[in-house]
Amino acid sequence: MAIDNQVVINRKMAEVLAIKADFERFDEWVQAFRESDLKLVRWEDLKEGQAIDYALVWQPTTGMFDPHPEIKIIFSIGAGVDHMLGENVLPKGVPVVRMVETNLTLGMTEYVTYQILRHHRFMPLYEQFQRDKNWKEIIQIPASRRNVGIMGMGVLGTACAQVLKSFGFRLFGWSRSEKHIEGIEHYHGPEQLHTMLSYCDFLICLLPNTQETNHILCAKNLMHLPKQAVLINVGRGSLLVENDLITLLDSDHLSAAVLDVFQEEPLPTNSPLWNHPRITITPHVASMTVPETSAEHIWTNIKLYRLGHPLTHVADMQRGY
Ligand code: NAP
Ligand code: GLV
Image (cartoon, rainbow, N blue to C red; front, top):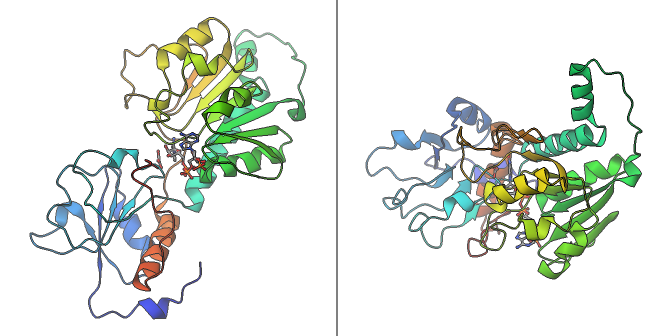
């Protein structure tokens, strides 16, 4: 949305955006906000009694916002907001805006497309053949004969579907509400989940972690996938019952899994997932928020707020996403 900077800049006092994140790149954030009139402060550097207007946070802690009843908007550094839902963490009535930004979306489409193409073109097998010095061909399957399903057809799921569609895959989507997206066979609600799963040679999970999605990737549901399907979980670790996945892989119901998110992160060194020959593990890096492009999203929302307009991408904290 284009908003004239002059309408909202030139205030008497700079407003403060305080940043708290484990993976903070403070200098990059300052640079990213150079065209705004905001003063950026590290949360740790806030002086006693110093007022803040906005906060940009990853994992807020209990009581962290108590000294700041003046805060106007809390921005999540991540697309998900589940990590902010602890008891007495968020102040009541303050909007939480989740992260929706170009590079976070592009990063996810790259990761998911890479993993699908890798398995679609049998690369794990060819890598094994190379290790065995085995010159062996596998008959190629055209993308148009492969079905890719996406659980969670929000910002990221829809973007992944569009990119995968361009390769010729047949796309299936599943979400809470009914949708009509050209070129995608869409299903919604718990009663349509098993039907959708029954089509998916590849299943990508891009659901948020909520009470309803907890353990949704369990044997009872995953058994509805066709035999030899591949699971890619990039949503949250709480969605997957890890032992059920191992059972389904060991019984050859699933052929492989790609996991970027886990029940416990970092994944404990004694987890059986690490050594499983058909599981690919990455350390929650499928996609990352980039300060430069995130600043556009945050600054746009601050300008909307100053003009008294509705904000974009406000999370519904009751619903959990
Ligand atoms: P989003 O736009 O809010 O989309 C969430 C989707 O999930 C929506 O389509 C929603 O359905 C659907 N959904 C939620 N609850 C459901 C339920 N009970 N049954 C069926 N569908 C349900 O979120 P997003 O920006 O795409 O991000 C999705 C998630 O990706 C985040 O919450 C986060 O956990 C994860 N993520 C992971 C990484 C990583 O690096 N691994 C990076 C970014 C994000 P409706 O459309 O009907 O509301
Ligand atoms: C990362 O996991 C995010 O939610 O953006």
